[in-house]
Every structure is written in C-alpha cells, then in structure tokens.
Amino acid sequence: MAASALLLLLVLPVGTWPSLGLPRRQCVHCCHPAWPPAAPGSYAPENDGEWVQLPRIRPTIDISILKGEKGEAGVRGRSGRSGKEGPPGFRGLQGRKGQKGQVGPPGAPCHRAYAAFSVGRREGLHSADAFQAVPFDTELVNLDSAFDLASGHFFCAVPGVYFLSLTVHTWNYKETYLHIMCNKQATAVLYAQPSERSVMQTQSLLLPLAAGDTVWVRMFQRDRDNAIYGEHGDLYITFSGHLVKPTTEL
Image (cartoon, rainbow, N blue to C red; front, top):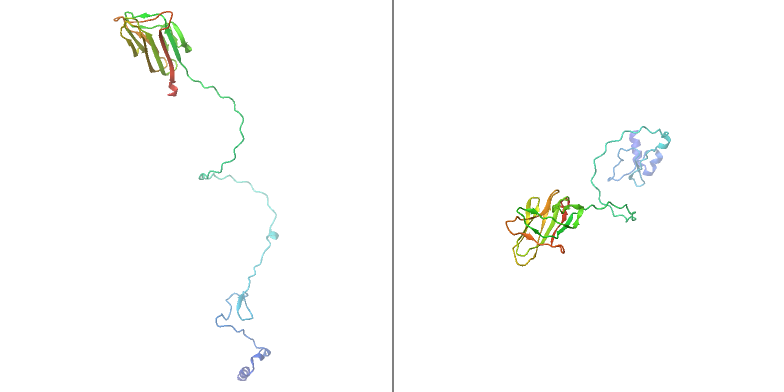
C-alpha cells in the first residue's frame, strides 16, 4: 500500500499537490539559510523566498497613569564643606566707562617741617683771653624763636640736613679767625690773614643735625690780634641757616 502511494505521488504533476492536501515547502536558494535564526516571530518569508527581519514591537507603559501625588518637601540637610579654590579665570572684557563720581571732601593739609634763621651783628667784636661765642643783635628770620640772640645759639627742634652760612667783614691789619660750631665740635673755619684792606669773607656748609643739637659761631682766643668789623649803620656780620630736608624724608 505504501509503495503504491509513493508511485502515485511520483506520477502526478506538481500542480495537483495542493489539492491532495499535502504540505508544500518553500523553495530557497542555496546561498540563504533554509530556516531563519532562532528568534521566533522576528523573521518572515517574502514572495521571492528570502527571509526579512520584522520590526520588534515593545510594549510602552504610560508613567503618568502610575505616578502618584507629589509629596511634601523634606527637611533640608546640612551644608557640605566648601570645595577647594579653583584656578583663576581669564580676565574679562573691559566694561564701559562709568559716570563721573561726586567730588569728595577736602583732605587734610600736608604738614611739612620748616626751620630757618638769619641773624646779624652790627657792632664789631675783638677776641678775648679765651674762646667766646659771637652774640647777635639783629633778627632777620627766626622761625619758632629757635635762635637765641644773646647766646648766639640755634637750637635744632626738627632733625635733618641744614644749610649754614657765615659772612663777616675783616678788620684792617687784624686777623679774622672764627669757627662754625655744632655743640662743642668745630665743623668749619672762617679765616683771613691781616691786611691793610678789609674784605668780606664767607663760609658755608651742609650739616646733619639731630634734635637738641646747637649751632653757634666761636671766636678764637686772644693769642693773636683777632677781630671782625662792624658798625651801626650797615650790617656786615650775618649768620643764616635753614632746613634742607628733614630726617623723616631721608
């Protein structure tokens, strides 16, 4: 019976197979796999026999349906530690020029130190048996009364560098021998030899003075005929000094 059925299938034409209810298998090329990979439902045959991949369908869930009501805000936690300082950034662009501000209040006046004196002597003076200070009788400039005419001393109250100048008129046939003194130290000498003609002699110098120092003119003692000339009409003998720069600015 089985042999006769097989013989019947071989004799019948191909087109009569569906009418017999026999399964028909798709014809495929040898270069394509006979069956798709094991992914059920992801491949389907086309009319030409090739298998193509079908789009995968993924289910989506509407979260808004499942989302509940917003809860209350929780308690704020503690602030964390400050992080390390980062590197400085690049300099930004220059902004526009702002409006001019209002005028400020006037500043305090500048307090500058001053010290100066200029004195003279109208009467002549001869040397004595010992050294003597030259007193003065004419006050030209005496800031803060720092120069004492009777003693002939300038008392330094503002320390700094001072310019000092001594000018005298010599006496005929007599020697002129004077020192500009700082405290008890001779700092400069004014000297003129005896001559039949009297002349004007000048000595000047820069001298650093500390607070409390004294500056004065000393006449040499009488082992020589020493004198300076003067008269009441004109001023022949002058002694001047002024502060050039205070110590605070040196």
